[in-house]
Length: 584
Image 1 (cartoon, rainbow, N blue to C red):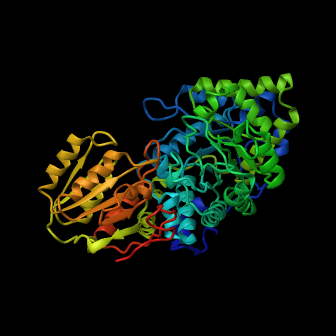
Image 2 (image 1 turned 45 degrees about the vertical axis):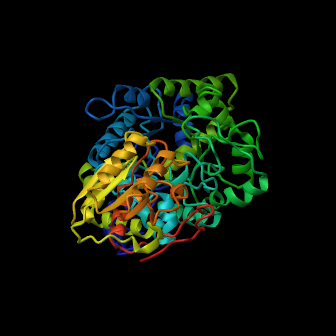
Image 3 (image 1 turned 90 degrees about the vertical axis):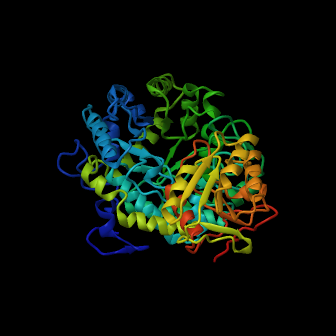
């Protein structure tokens, strides 16, 4: 895909994507005038040969930035880049595209003002578009499970293209997506809607599709969490998960999406803080030579860059400590250590690597391998030539009308009408009927979308916690007395809290038309199977509940008559099979 040619990708022209879809530069691409010495023909080996030990280990640490009162990077961030010689960053969450671009330019200026002037790899978690980290003025795209429900690789390809366009316009080069986990455990507390689904073939196809699309668009893709986080029952942010399945299950179910990504030429893979007992019963994948070098490098043939998940997550920090674990991860095969804590944790990561290099716990050969991979990635994606961006272009590209329109089409295609007994749905959008939107979490964004789609008055009610009390449920029923029809939104990141199921049943008992909306995982209906209408949106992620506004809007449009396109990418045990989905 080249700018200037009117190539169409799933309804988006390269003209609409703009400058952010310039082709990926070759490993020895000609750099523009003014690039650092040695970068005119970008040569990773030449850069490596010029580096001190401190500069080498700095390239192996990816640090989160910190903000001052003005929202721009603070003095500790400057010290991370100039004193610790950090080679890549994941930004805190700048509010708007323009701010993100200015932010990127500032940290790049600090990086350029160092002895070698090497550019930073700017990274972000853009799982459902750049909105995942830049909340305003960007394009919310479906979560992976929404794309899995849409069942069309063209949507996955288009979502990657839009993400890349916005990310590159804001100065980002590196995306920690797509999620390659096969979500085989419905009670998984941390992956859930971040996965394309429960079937290996679906996840494999969409991971491969997005890896190819990201590469073509010039954004580094990073499938995660190797070798799979989809069958866990513990959140690795809070504890150390392990999986009990045998090696045959690992090979058949969980590894194929990563293998497909490697075949598609993926440049980066992220590790999981998960103990895979069939390979290494003692260490999580992030720290395991058997997993990273044995399986990923030797068996699967991956030669690209391995980046760890955040090392301050409890799975690692509380069991090994970040300093020891940093050295263990590199010896296991990791190339870049993700340091997402305070400035002191960045200091610890750099000092741990430097001490280990000097005392022989890390070999010079092993360090040079990793640094060469980092530098080669900067050359391959011509980061020297794409160091700075135009904030005005970032504002113009991000969240534009074309992207928003296409995102909504994807959202409707993924929204799944699971149940519709007695024709309770759709609601008439032109009626002056009064609609109550009730729920226990994230009701406001969905209620606003319902208000936008309906001509009649909409009221909203939300409990104080994710588990409504009996008194709160009584209040919701009282509110329902003034409504003609009811939408009740439920949310779970594992099992549905009993109070939410009780709320649905109490509203059903009013005799009013009631439809339930699963705004997170699609399994909620198992807790209230008597509801007449049920829609799955896959719109809210687990743990910190990142809300996908496009999926809320798509669900509201489906409630009021737009034809849903989704089919379940998971099984709702005992009720609905994989692939189930109704239409009006």
